[in-house]
Length: 562
Image (cartoon, rainbow, N blue to C red; front, side, top):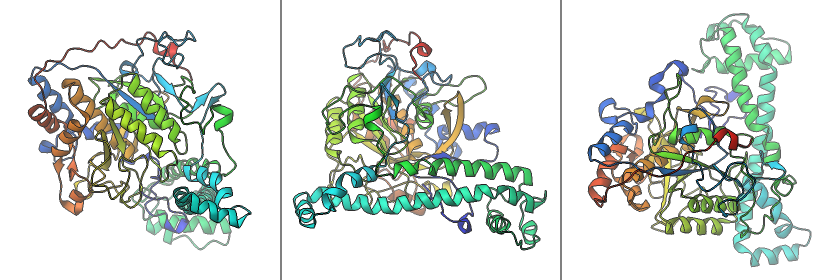
């Protein structure tokens, strides 16, 4: 995504779109019903690059097809499974009795009624964890840069791959840890001078004229406040706002920035490791799988709940939001991603758990630049491929070419490879509702390694505490595609993952403006109705589908562990 700028003199635009997802901006989002559902639009009729959801259902039903239920595994930060907009579309394990403390189905996971949590244990749940570069530096620094230089050189030669990974991680660690400290200092300082800014405005609106009329103050805090005001007065987000509205808006922005940077004091702390105390597994044993708990939500489920709503949210009350696969999908929550980087062991186990428990599509809205356990994850990719399960992955939010900056887990073992080593992984970039800048400015891209683009900016969906929110990121684009895949699979259950990928790639709505056609294989944004036509014409085997016998939840609220 757009990078957070680290000094007050660069605050124009004030976009807090981090390497994670952030709140998207709109004029009056709660009143704009059209904006809330823009990603469902039909491009042919509106010229907005939505995914044509409603017409896809109409087309499939016109062919006399009846849908089966498709379970979609959400490998994420957790999901509020009793959210009013999700509760009817949450998967329930038909062979598990809620709350009896037993492993009724014998799969090794006690009371896994709606999924599993691989980043928790008897002592609670992990919230903040390290970044992967921190873990790599902490593990290998004594090996490659210890007190014995002779031994260091020997280890560097003997462990060439690990040393290369260490050097990459070290470079990123040094850069990012400094940025984290500077970011927290900068935004804490700006937050502290908000009262000074409001005082200097004197009740007047935020305009160039107002700012230019303020005399240079002698007080240091007032001087900093005036400098910040000079920048934000040019920002569309603040320009022209009343003093009161400006105060609220900038407080919200500062809170978001500080909340983002504060955890990084732990994420980049070489001595911080919550794993052993909380999860209690032997982390170095990649073969270990029976650990965790059934806390489907976890400490912060905003990201995962938002993703789940994009896939299978249902309108309720005054809320009009609905997911791409709201008519056919059930969400399985597999908690895998902390506030920090996911761990390879957990990713591999999460994939296998979801596959073994009936998920046919997995959404993976996460990524990182180094992966010490990549082979274990690749084995899980192959396991999913052998079981006919589609993996949908976010391309990443660094505005980078993923061939030059790998975002693990990747389906290419080597960048030079002509094709991925498995045929069941789909990588998704993020598009906008603005045709003049169709690629979201934060989205990663590559003609070979990114399959398609899908709506990922200003996406309205479910978040915890029964609420809704706009977020943006390739993390939002990925579940759009996962939902689309679930729709195709619901009506044509015999589709293979590679056929679903081909249908979505070949039928995307193309765009050649600003080089967009070079950002992915498809060269465009997915269109679910066209993909349905393509799949039906090219792959449908003529066999009728029947309704799924997936059992409903016996009592979601009873089973939820918070």
